[in-house]
Length: 514
Image (tube, rainbow, N blue to C red; front, side, top):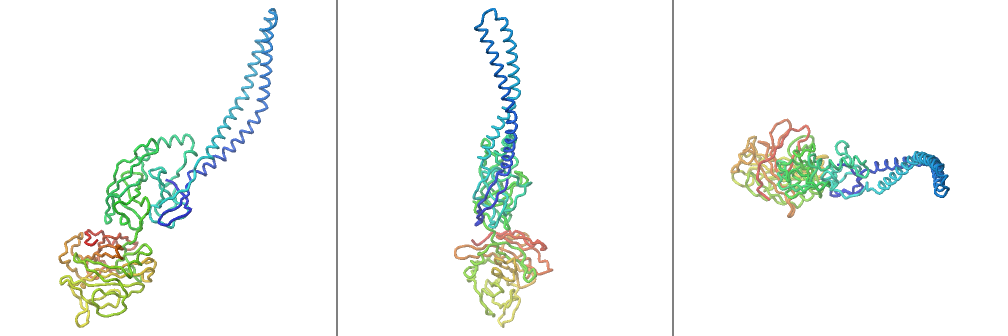
């Protein structure tokens, strides 16, 4: 783990990343070496005169000894005793001179050798590659990261380098520093090399893999890990080939962004093989497009909304999208193409009405007769069915299904509606449960709840596919200060906002549409 500096890119989560494996440490080494060499040069120069003087004395003593040896070899025999005595004295003086020379030369030579070693170390450092530039994917779809960012090295060394989720800034105690061996001390290099494969296997950080199963509702996935080998002797460093039931933590939508075959990054929390979690994609990170959370209109929490999180997606819904709906298991019911309609009065189904900054489409479903009912609407939430006399009445056998589409930047939604939202209303015309006639109890602990499944398509592309229940009864989901229970949702991740009760649960339901 380490850090890098973004120097460009960002589109689709792909960046140009400047990496540094210890340039500051190298520069400190180089500055220290230069200073060290300078001091050695001074000391070597200071000892040079003494070494030269000692060498001259050694040479003189050697010459005197050699002269006596020559005289012994060529002189008369009667001079031999005297010459032998003098040779003995000269030999001792020569030995003393050599010792005196060694006393000043050896330290000087050691300094020269040290200087040569430092010069080699300097050349090695200067030629070491401690910086580089790479194309690196952010593991999530963050396109506006800048400056210093934390990096992910897989599998615990820089065989693959990615950018941490959100392009966050590095934290030393969490991310550490990736350092080139060339700028380490020999002891550090040995220790790192000796420990590397063990740390990679038994204190893992990240792995790459492929999703083989994903449950967006339970927010888990099974992952087939890539083979991982350490640079140390190519040792296998995976403890198991697969990880099952892995939690997914990804942007705002978690597992909803993934599918079978997705190439993913697994993080091991606390560096424990027993605590994996999927945190993003190896490349081409996917967007979180929709999320369900309580909606506030004019400061009032009124119902549930699917907020669009990506620009341009909502534009594909209007005006050419088509909606297919299943109500309590029956259907499909194809709704006409969405359109604005400023008129007010009884309509045949479906009814489209204009909203501030958007438009809506609502229909009633007769739960027994299998026919639509007509009604008039003069506000966001239609208040009833129109009878033959044109008067609104309640019909206990009628279920209302309403989708209200608020375009990007709608003033009704405020800043949270930057990219548009769809408001959901599912309920009956009474303050009681409407039995889900002929619909099997597929909803956990709420078999009496009404359920609607929607497929919204633009051309051949499915823009949105989800199912949701009411909150238990009446014109749900709930009004202020009234506890209408919990809504069950499938196909769109939900987020509980601060100050709002936990109003959503995963829906146990098998999609009918495709």
